Length: 271
Image 1: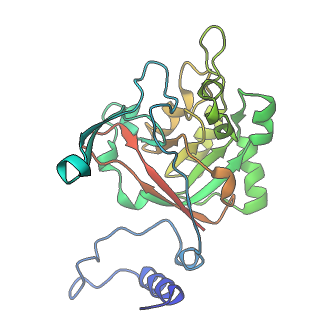
Image 2: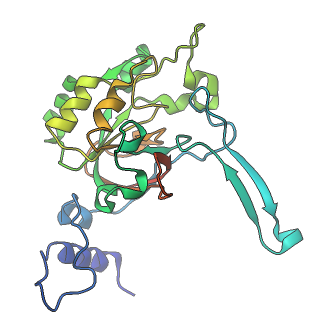
């Protein structure tokens, strides 16, 4: 059995080998290249699960039904266990496909596989969000991140870390609705979204809140920038404060049911 170091070295060499000749190639020669450089893959040592467990108590967007699981069989009675699951596509830690906000946009099952393995950029606004629940990620926040860590890589997933998941113990505080029913939670500002789409060509954006947009948004401006541009969104992302702000690789185990506007996702950060 090869050591992890040997496996990483072989994988990096394979990724760095370039395209195979037209004749005499292998069945995997047509696989698309990753946005992650081989030297970054060679440094990976740890994994962090960025996925919340989906339960009936997990807060959902107002108007959506909660997650439900109904037992169909048990090992004790049937010799095997099985359950029927009912949930909306946009519940728990989940992916928003372009089709969620763009007529004719790509559905989750049609997203390029290579875009689901991406450099992970974590931009923290937790300190500001603790004072202002309507805090929005700005272009200045992104430029400040770049001054510390370098240019945001093309094909990256850029995540907002607001610390909002600390409120999940009390779902009402996570939604944070006022007396009129307006939600108040941090999110992406439209200008920052446009910067990432037009100036950095990211694969997608993420948030640790219920939405890419600030909770009080009625026009869903960030959604309407990211998704029609062919980028995907990740919402209710867990543990962003427990991964480095740069250098990690995100693996998105996205949904693949036909016509998916989104769906629950298993997110793994490798670093």
